[in-house]
Length: 237
Image (tube, rainbow, N blue to C red):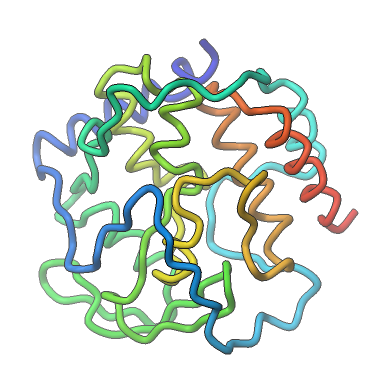
């Protein structure tokens, strides 16, 4: 029950935010959990480093990630029976800003917002595919571990508070602003079936995925575990 214990404070905070601010969906299109858009990434140069570093909070060290990967329960994926995105209420409002808006502010450069907390200008670099976006409406907020993937990994047994906490988690590496094309290409797939087109981001992606699965006590398949281990091997020592 490790994940439920870790997440209880977040669940309470999100529950209060939902009660105060409701669940608001912004004007950017909400991606389906599984999509067929496999458009190639647009031209864009990744940062001049051996790996990409984003504003994702709560990333573990490489040593901790390997330890946590070894602690994950390996199991076959569960049924999708009963799944509905509405069972993961998002985007919660806190102090007048939705979780989506807060990620847009966190992940963007030179972001300017209006009185409703909605970004009116700025730029956003998509670490998945190297695309730079100049309008907030073109940015998808990706759930690092997709909601449907979480459902098949144990979230089907959660209560509404914990699923809301998971869908609006701003303290862990669960939410990231990316291009719509890359987000919809990913769909609800795990790293055994989909990896970011930019290999420079594989390290941080594996760190984040492992941290989220560990923090919420979600299971991984054997193939998922093995691919995460391989992606962690791309991290600088």
